[in-house]
Figure (cartoon, rainbow, N blue to C red):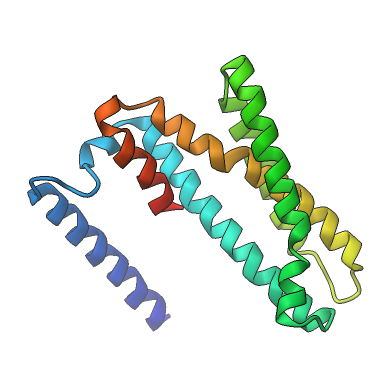
Length: 176
C-alpha cells in the first residue's frame, strides 16, 4: 500500500509541476488551451490507454512465449508477427477507406472494442494454449490497434488550426 501512495503522490506532484511550468512558459511544450477541446481530451485518454495496451501486450506476449513455449528472446519477438500483420493491414486498409468516405470515428469505435476484447482474451491464455490460438488473438489485437492508432492523429488534426498541427499531432505520440 505504501508504494501505491508514493506513486500517486509522485503523479500528482509531477502533473502539478507540469501545469505550473506550462502556464508560466512563453512558448509551452504542450499548450494547456488544447485541453479545453473535448475531442482532444478524449483522444489523449484513448492514446494513453492504447499505448499502455500495446506495450503491455508486447511485454506480456514475449514473456509468455519464452516461459510457456521455451522460445528464445529473438524467436519470441518473431512470434509477434501476427500482431504486426494485423496492425499493418488495418492501418493501411482503414486509411484507404477513410480517404474515400471521409469518416473516421467509426473506425476508432470498432477498433477500441476489438482491441479490448482481444486483450481480455490474452489474459485467458494458459500454458496449454497452442500457439495458433495466441496468433489468432494477436492478429485481431493488431487489427484493433491498427484501426485506432493512425486515426488518433487524424482526429486531433481535425480539431486545430494549421499553426497548432505540429504540437497537437506530436502530443498524441507523447500520450501514447
